[in-house]
Amino acid sequence: MFPRLLVAFLALAALLPAAPLPVRGLHLSAPKPSDVPRMTKFIREVLPREGVNTLVLEIDYRYQFKSHPEVADADALSLDDARAIATAARESGVKLIPLVNLLGHQSWAKKTFGLLRSHPEFDETPGLYPDNKDIYCRSYCPNHPQVHAFVFDLIDEVLDAFSADTLHAGMDEVFLLGEDACPRCKGQNKAKLFAGEVRAIHDHLAAKGRRLWFWADRLIDGETTGIGEWEASKNGTAPAILDIPHDVVLCDWHYEAAHATTLAFALSGFETVTSSWRRPGVALRQMDLIRLARSEASPQVASRLLGMLHTTWMPFEDFSAAYWHDGPASVGAQESALCFREIMQRLRQE
Image (tube, rainbow, N blue to C red; front, top):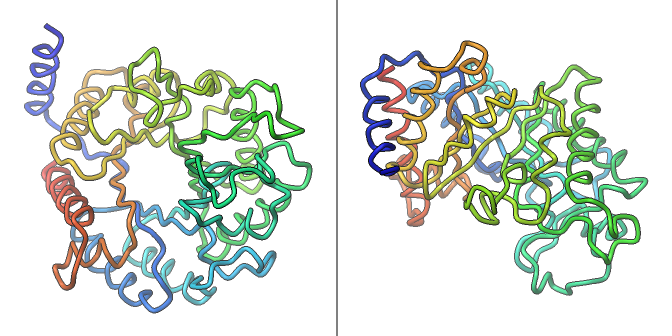
């Protein structure tokens, strides 16, 4: 019965008149310095044509930090690079939101990223997991007495460089939190730890008139919803939703099925966007759910359903080659570029 009701629900959504979604976004990885001209061209030519008005640009440690230069990657962007990208976005009518992964995603495979590579004392699991074996990604310890001053220097510098008033802090797929190996976090409630980190970042940004976005998966109960441990949480962080500020924006990513959690966040008082990746059918159903909810919900709830943020999760040169068909591109890039085109085509019809 439920699948048939969902089909009918989505069919009705497709027939409803659609108001333009406030956020029509794209997530991209920061380019290599040599690809900055290609990115500025992409911003100026592609984003306005496709109807994109928000660009989440994943920077992480690919910037030449002056405050803590030791964390910068070898192929990091300069201040002039950042200004060129920011100018292209501003002149194209695109809101630029830098993304710097905080808390989790401090490593990938055998590579430990800039913060914990240069300052292992901030690690949530110090001395464990050589070569990052048997873990997904490292986390920094949210209770380390020096970590916030350090990472706040980094995010302030990035936001200044890109003339941005909003930070996307990542915070997805945090599996290492409240670990027994951490002398400060051992035995602590993981929801309280996660909420405390959200509040710390939020309060720092708010004091400077800036806003916080982050991925929403750790706020979804993976057991209750049946969504699982990746697009939702099964390690005890979900109750954090009761203890975080309501003026954050939650980016609700689901890639294999169009879960209705974005509406749940809006009903709980949060502004939210839904995020797609590489399956056009799933992405279009996500859009239909938002459109129907915005049409039928109260004005208060409808106003919190901000729109779509398409993600790429690959190097910029790979995604842009797939979009422009001007070079070799991975299968994943081709799938994501196709999904992006179909989403934006639908949005332009509104």
